[in-house]
Length: 367
Image 1 (tube, helix red, strand yellow):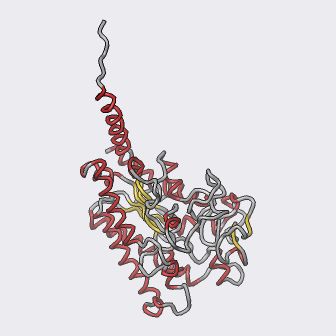
Image 2 (spheres, rainbow, N blue to C red):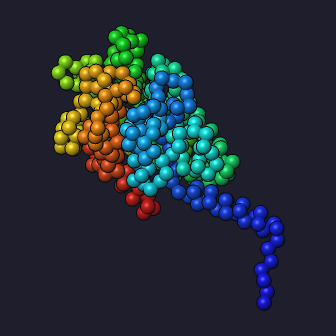
Image 3 (cartoon, helix red, strand yellow):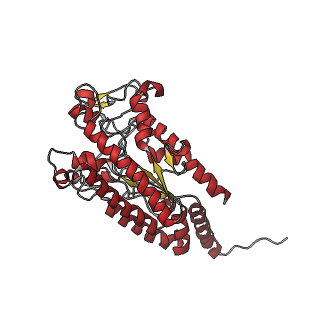
């Protein structure tokens, strides 16, 4: 009877082969890339010297670890829930030291709380990853993955990936309307400022396309005049801020129109416009219909509507996050985020244009 003979070299080659196969399998699964602000940041700002951080309790109170992670949420944020729905691992913050090797193949989250379309948005937060830098990191990411997979397979990974970008709210809240007579409000009347933002956002989206992105969800601004922080500062009887709602009302339709134009220019529906204004307004205007007791008072905060300052260990904290639409003065609860993600996947053309994410994925599956 012959017995198999293994040389000592076989025991060296086998682990290498298994590692290569594992990397190849992971490269064939879909990567997910996230760009934008605090609505989608999952911890990059933890690694930066900035005041725009969510790294202390009670942030993360309902996260699986029950610890703060840098997400501006009581639990999961929108990228986490999209990942969960697609059976993917949520991408790590790009700056996380553990985001190396095989883990890079899941994608990366480049988002940073406080940023906007414009580089002067959020200057009060000092050291944040402005969108131009996020795109630089995306290039750097591709170079790092090329050293693992080679250029051709890296290009396939990038072309096949899902991308989410969320920008715009801070350009109003933390720029144009931040203080009376802000520099931008002296430079531009509001309609002109919105047109300028849209023209700058177009450049960002085309840069994403140039870098290989082919499946991109672009969210509009939510109802920025209705968040607890703005109610606390601007509202007399719980009404939304007219100025901020007017800004969102100008910005969102022009963003959707610009996305249609860019898709026509490219000749393909690369960009999906998510009408996050309507997704949020559904439960902001009728919270009880969605099982919330309030859409005016934040779960965590202080002052009127719990809308003053930051959510800290000393803040008021609601016992049941599931019945609040807003977690802190600016950001939705995990449960509200789940309602938004449901519309991203399944919403009609009132919510997702030209089609929802499920339809895009089904079309891809058939081709």
